Length: 208
Image 1 (cartoon, helix red, strand yellow):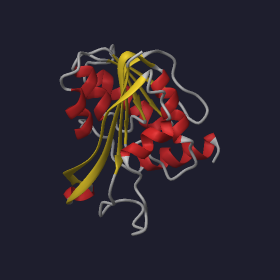
Image 2: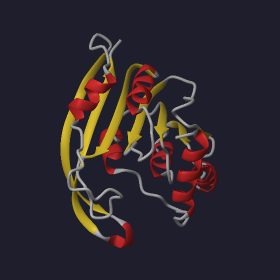
Image 3: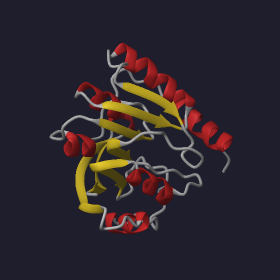
Image 4: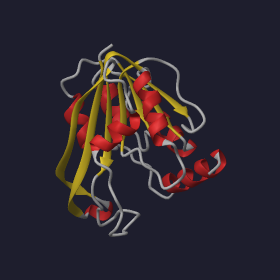
């Protein structure tokens, strides 16, 4: 899948949705980051921007990236209207081709999953290496199929957090798995539809 194809696909996904004025942050991010001291954060696949805005309001300096120009432009406008443009840097990246510069205290990859070709393990390894000592990589994946999921194949497999950690292959001398858990919650989907879903949550901390 080429960069143009990925950009076109995700531009279409975002353009088909009404622009959010107050996008919600992801629950697993707010759970994990509420008690962390603010620093520099990287939001991989920022989408509508709820996570970036939530972090910025809490004092984080956020680099928010997405392959979609539509998502990037919308978030840049939201950062201005929410009064946090000085704490959010928005960049367009196809992460199969480029990765933002910098060192981070938190890298958040919330539902960083795609139906397109992407070496996700390589991207997450790069993210782990972009952490400062003491920094955390938070990965939240779908652990179940919601009624509104794109893929309704009953045979679809959701890799466990331990499997994702193994794919990242972070040297235990430098990185520690702080949490690997399958967590249940009630989610709200399109049209206000609610269902119980499973999240696979992985937190890796750089110790050296």
